[in-house]
Length: 492
Image (tube, rainbow, N blue to C red; front, side, top):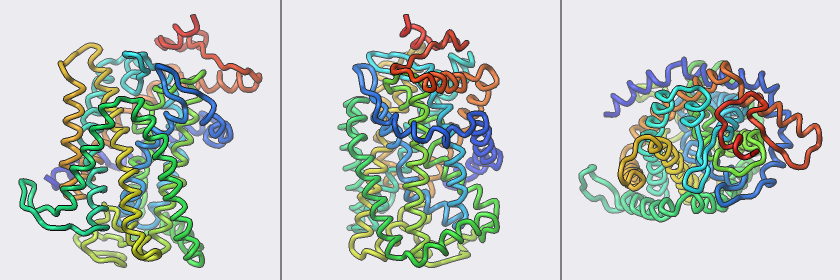
């Protein structure tokens, strides 16, 4: 199974996807005149300027839901994997894909807002919606929706659950071994899987409002605590910092694991972590109550910075400054081996050893707790994304109890992922991320050629901002944007 998954991944994550993700980010950065830099202050201002409604959530809640998807196991275990397989230089390419990807995140999230709909008392939108409405290709929209349901409902949850279980096992030990249908498992993994599934079920049965309220409290608090610990670890090893920064930049272009490996792993884990171009962010963006679509696009662009430039960088500096990493050379060999050979790079172990080395007795459990909250909130975001795409499909094709089936399937996936090997869980997750990225990036590039709706929205927003309006408005018909029914009806 693992061999087959690796073969599929080699096709999905060929160099073509790496260059597509980087190229799209550069393309949209140039077209928006680097909106991620020009309107940085406006992004921060918008975070707290909108309020929720009966149908929609606030910009900050939408950011929290989106960040709960972005800030997850990719920020801890994913960064470790990028370093473990691509060398320290992979961190540089994670930064590059985040900086360029912020413009991609603006475009896709603005599209999510422009073409959103009201469904059973709440806003819904995402790539499937804008592919159908703006591109007019319903078959492509269905392909994205089905792919996303499989990816976020079945493949990706296993990655998050697996990292939670592995972190718990490193912190607490495996416990008594029990023979099961999944092989011999420690009590720690089984108990962790049961606990995660139970709490997850309680929240996802409460709907998007409960998800939004939970994530807006947990995500900022946990991210801040994690960054504070990272700052302490770096400060206690401050003399090593210049050498680490130099190593990242030096290895990015003459890497020990090969130039292609650094770029490939940096981009792969960067896209997995910050989700720019992947098509997940627009779902939460569409749920927000805003005066103008561009506002939520800017907020989502800012979330990419938070994810990669803050949280991922915190992990990278902790790992590199303490030397708590190995660099694999393939076939069981290592270019650098500072830790036991049996530690999986696709796990939170590097990060746990890094913090533990500076804060004995605190590091392993702290990272396990941080990872639990990061990964758990990501599971909530995955459910919401899958639910939105099920809602899209049921507009024309209804299955009795489809939402209940989704909830049960996702919880089963979480349990299965928690008890499987890390490499298999990550391999399945990478397939899901890669397929969504292919479909979504191609779609937003085609939409640019067909009418530039996201860029028209940005130009309109900047014109109103320059005019000093107190209340923003959006008239898609005046801008030549068709089928934006929600906004067309709103102005009537």
